[in-house]
Structures are given as C-alpha cells and as structure tokens.
Image 1 (cartoon, rainbow over the protein chains, first blue to last red):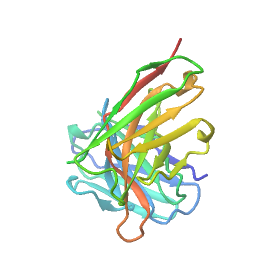
Image 2: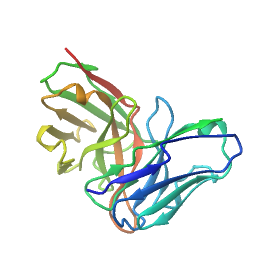
Image 3: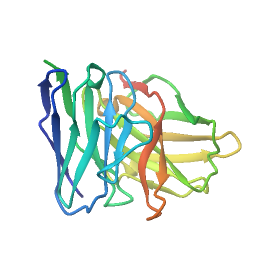
Image 4: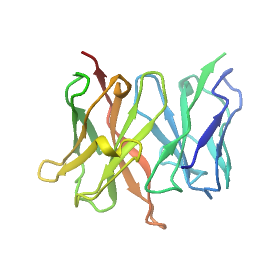
Length: 108
Length: 125
C-alpha cells in the first residue's frame, strides 16, 4: 500500500502569513494527489486536484504543487476562515484510496 | 446542486451489524461518471476510505475491512447503503458518504467532490 505522510501534524500561524504543508508519498504517484480542507464538525471539501489544479469556486490563495513523491500545499495569505485540518489523498494505487494523517492549522 | 445525506442508527452494540443509507438528491446515482463511496473518521483521527459502488452494482472494498463490509445500491430510490458486520469499539466513527467523480482525461475515478454531512456511529453496549 502507498503511505502518505504529512508534515507538520499541526501548525500555528498569524493572519496574513504564508502557510505551507507537505505531503510525501511512499512511492512515485506522479501527480495523482488531491488536497481537502475539513473544518471542525464538517465534512471534508475538495480544494486541489491533480496536485495543482484549483477546484471551481476555491479562492486563489490556495495552491498546490509537486509530483512524484513530494507535494506542497500553500495558503498565500492566511485568513481566519482557513482554520481547519488539511488532508492529502492519493489515487495512484486505484482502486484503493488513502489519505494523509492530516495537518491541523490554527491561528496564532 | 448535488446533496448526500446519511441516515441510520447512531448506536450499535458490539458484534452486531452497522447499517447506514446515503440518499442522493440533485443528481442521479445512475450516472456513469461517478462512483459512490463510504469513508469514515474515528473521533479525533484521520480519514479511512471504506469502499465504493457503481450504479451497476460493482463494488470494491478496502482490503482492511473487506471481510466485514457490504455496499449495495438502490437506483430506484437514488440510494446506496453500507453494512459493516461484527463491529467493535474500534468501528466508532463519523461515517460519510461521498461521490467519486471521473477524471475527464484519464477516466480514473479520482476525487471525492461531494460529501454528506456525516453521521456519528458509536459502538457500545
């Protein structure tokens, strides 16, 4: 199975900060990676697909990059409403989908 | 606007079978462009994909749960269902139903683009 490892597990940042989360796959997954945002008590929401494509309606301050085994998710200017846990998800090893363990983002 | 809604008991006794239904509105479950999945999240933990079903009835389950999982579909009601047998406390989780959409170019069913609100199922005597 492909393991997805996110770092950090949690982070605290100030409004306006640039925030970066990384996701590492245990083997080459090309660009077969998605990113989700989960606010407390809510279902996850798809933000980025194919590693770098912004889902329709998602603010442009969110972005993703990477391929192979190393991926990055970035919020260019943190807003209060971005407080959430973020998950990466691979789809290279279909039909088995796996998620990273999550990164909890808090406001400093 | 597609909406998914989970329903079912919030409390199940150990060794019994957990049963949930997901009702899809605003779109047809019989569209060939989507798979329909169940995903769970234990309290305070991450997401685990359980399995999916296609409108035709074909399924695939996470190998870690395969021996205990059954997913079925009722296209006449626009619903799909989850059964998880022989539950233990480790199966306590929020259970989500979600739609897998098909990638335009690759044809892979690759992303979960619509989710239900989730339902907490507690396994306890």
